[in-house]
Image (cartoon, rainbow, N blue to C red; front, side, top):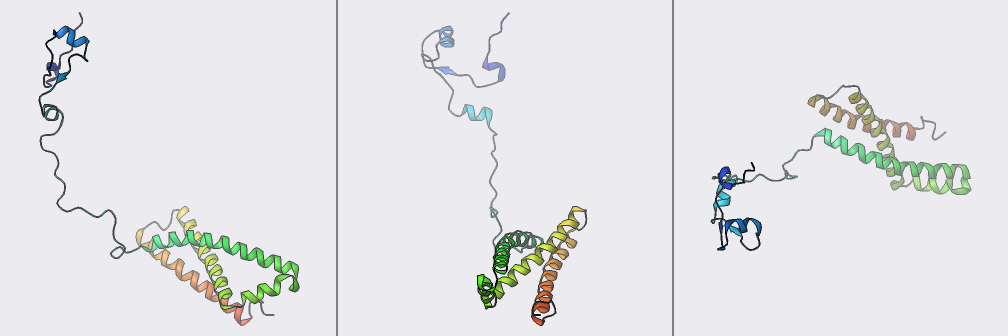
Length: 187
């Protein structure tokens, strides 16, 4: 025995039709006889009676830069990426220097040394050296993380500050050795 579907079995609102045709014909030809629900009955059947009330005070989507304190770990992460890009520029400068050295003094080495001796050239060399030192010390920190050390929040913050300090100390030591002639550069 085939049972007919009845919306009353689901406790749904009963639909009224706008036509005078027999119910059997209405079940077959929906274009001729469109069922209509009483206004608001669908929403009452399927929606919550009390919709959620939005919060009185909306929170901002993101913290404003003036009230947000950047953690040292975030600064070191961003700086690690930036120094990686700077090292690419430094590799181009190193390649330029190697080509100039191989061509001799008349082949461009004099031009390179004249540019490297200017304040902008010294600043660029300082920046490339700092990027190399920072990337090296940050890489050591990442190596320690790979070994499972330094994940505590306070330790990570301390290591981030240490990476910055060591990188500046290393660059200062390298430039002090070069300018005093102890690195073999001026001999």
